[in-house]
Amino acid sequence: MGKIKVTQVKSSIKRPQNQKRTLEALGLRKLGQQVVHEDTPNILGMINKVKHLVSTEEA
Image 1 (cartoon, rainbow, N blue to C red):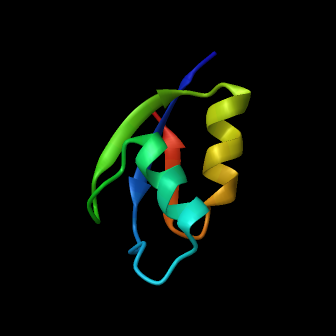
Image 2 (image 1 turned 90 degrees about the vertical axis):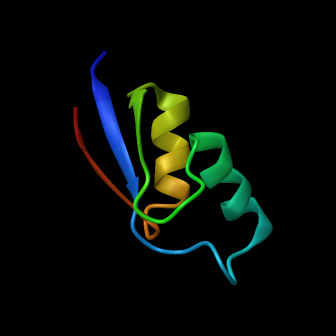
């Protein structure tokens, strides 16, 4: 499996609690922060849940 780079592009202010927790679980705390994860089904599911707040690209 490959790697995927996730960048937070929108704020989590005024978002439901489950979306805030999903961002924290991905390791994203600040706007513009980037993290690299394996593209496992678990990670891809979390990214899909907050896809309107993050951008992704192959790493």
